[in-house]
Length: 152
Image 1: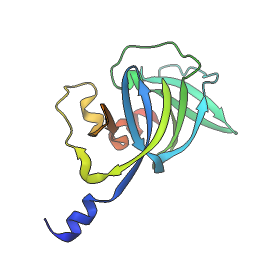
Image 2: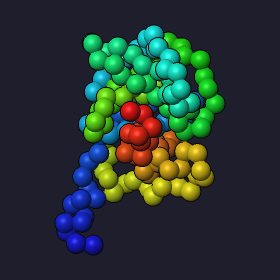
Image 3: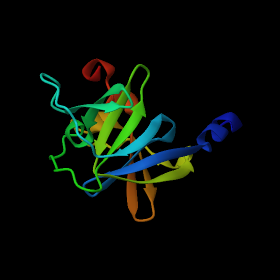
Image 4: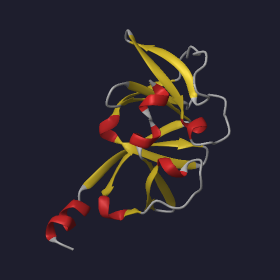
């Protein structure tokens, strides 16, 4: 491996981590605008099943996506830990409904394991896996997870 490639593999990645059930997921911290407590979400008729609805964020309408629904996980009623992670995409600001937000973690890019073969539902959205302590951190590929045509 060339020294330039080695330096690329040693770049440090920062991810905001969140939970869905017993699993921990991570998304690039640079895409996260803010994290909100659960609030009233207005439903949108004829929206895809994973779109919960819309919220008013300081005068801007933001589409909220259910991360569980997008990944094919069973629904769960919101509770005190439920959060809406506000993400910036190329053309939109989108909210991601998650069970809870845990922390920001840093790790070298070289420690990301290849995308596992996990089948149809969540597989296309997984960028890789990072093993830490006794846990696995599943890294989401937001470019595939937040398909603009489906959300906008």
